[in-house]
Image (cartoon, rainbow, N blue to C red; front, side):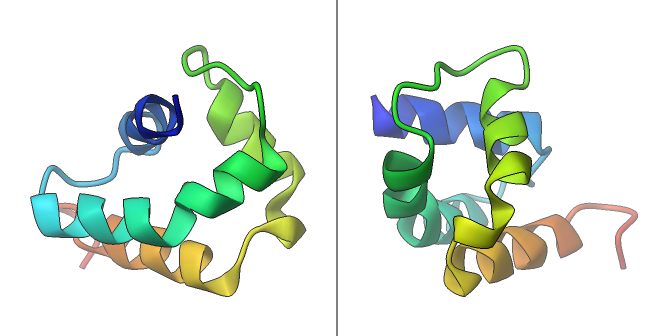
Length: 77
């Protein structure tokens, strides 16, 4: 369930398709989503909303991984 949820988050926040970035985000954020957003179903922006609502509870490592991945998107130089 967490892998599916994290995959939905990656899509929702438009993380680049680079496998390395996705793996880094998954590794850094999987436990945070399991702890802070249990039972939140992917789709409809629910995971993203949960993350924004509980942002202070997410680890710095997760936040940094998401920022780094987003910076790799085309147009975010």
